[in-house]
Length: 426
Image (cartoon, rainbow, N blue to C red; front, side, top):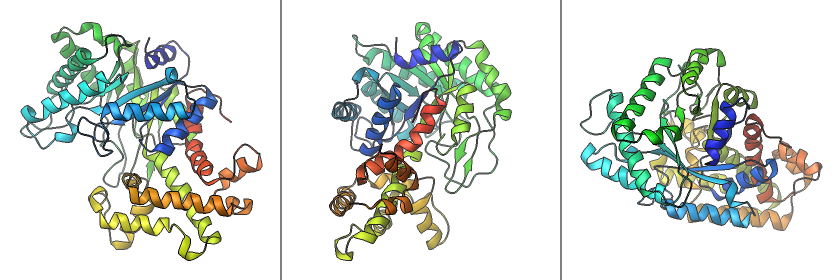
């Protein structure tokens, strides 16, 4: 049985367990997730999004096969068992081609899903909720479901014959993936009626294609539980607002909810989400946000220890890079020049995450680590700038080394998810 399916079955059997979905391609985040899963004994689910990894390379420059091989390479280096690693694809559909007509966009979506399935990805979120050029507004559920069924049929044909059959996730969340573009007010959870309509439409569309046998492998429905973040604010989970929505699963004994944009929720709220059947918790920007915090803290330590001409000057350099290449943030961050500067460097939306992979930025991070490795980091400076890691250093469980400190900052977030999903954490 697919390992995600097994966790879903345990959850619906009364065991309050869940699984964290790590949505990031950053090497340090991936290593952090593997080290955390090794320690807490969990299955590790790593997902790539449709704009991050596709048949053309996405914004990472990686195809599904290349991303798979990269993750497996990290797993081998970290001595993480491959049989505890699950790869997934998120928002697979025509998301990247919304300005094209259905006749133009859907064949590309076919190829995208086929590439993920053929590469052995075991969890596929099929999302055709976006309007394409010429589509009616709003897009009818029947059209969304028919397109999703088309892509599931493609995946079934392309998946390796000798592997475990993939599980599928349907539905989508509002606002768009990756955090809201605008400042949010109150946020309404998905209505029970809308959730049932999504389920009925997809079940019917699969039946129309002769894919009834696939329905038991549709293990999760993406709905909005009322959690989100914008640039400066987090909307926390309020379980009292989802009481009726939770009842939708009464008629779906083999299915759970999948929660997107859970970044920055507290451990208590994450635990409540799992208890209320959001058994798949997706997190991405919250992990790279924690990494950015740690790298900037290390840069502040560097300023105290390293002569000016030898420093990485990471913070200033990152802002210069973002100003010189504004494509990933200029349509998100409003306000005057100072407000935009604060958002570029510190926003919950974490648009800075798109810049870490450039060779020039990687060189600066390498210089930062090299400088601090050479100088050593006095414990009081760790206490001043990285207080959570300071405690672990003093306990003797964390080395006072720059990369180890940065990785542990990411793991600090992952510990909350692990605890919420039913694992024992240190």
